[in-house]
Image (cartoon, rainbow, N blue to C red; front, side):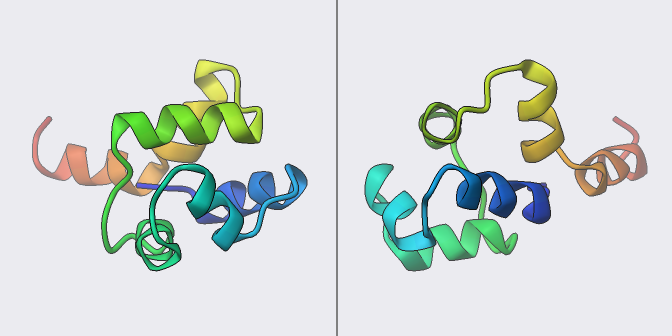
Length: 80
């Protein structure tokens, strides 16, 4: 799951609004909002484009933002 706080912080630091980021990765603002709020998920292409735009460079940063603790807890509950 997305770490919403870190994601939004990086988005603002890079000078994007939800609307401008959505346009940059070719999705609607509503779709981006749904992904930020956990109602749907980013695909690999979107994550790579976002990382380039928001200057998220290391694997650790990517994991911290796009693989937050809540998803890891879910995996443990499922026995993975």
